[in-house]
Length: 196
Image (tube, rainbow, N blue to C red; front, top):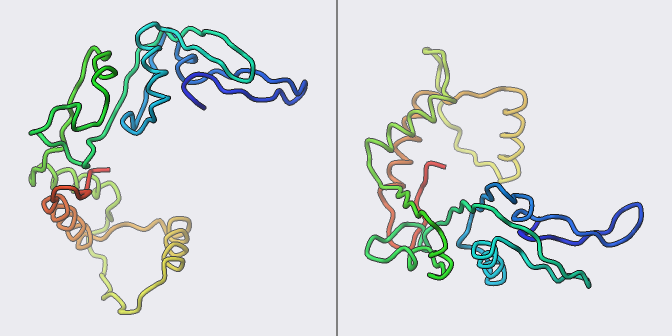
């Protein structure tokens, strides 16, 4: 589905019909857009019209019309270098045209600041959802043999389906430490670990 409309053939009559896109479907509502910074220029020009005139113009397959798009747009964008640079402006950080950005009434910056205590609390919480409930489980020494990607994928699929695995306490500690190490080692231009 696109933002405006798309054209499809009716399966019964075989005639071309217009199907509403996200902006038209959200008329008198809210249209939520993720990865706003990744849109191409033609999509952005559609948004200019929708945000300024509350309509969407369509000229496809010989069909010319103007549809209502009286919608509020809620959009999320990521910084261009995977981490927000406070020395740059919002426009420079998310690579959006100032003319489009100015059409938003509110702009909130949600920064993912690295804080070891908060990161540890979050990692501990997430792992507690999947951790083992029993206290006295034996931990086997890891085997030195390695698995191929295909074998590992099959193993994970099988254990999820039949074994309902739980993460051991010692493994949870190692995962938390690994997550904290990845969060703390972010250098400019690299993708760092995120809670997701």
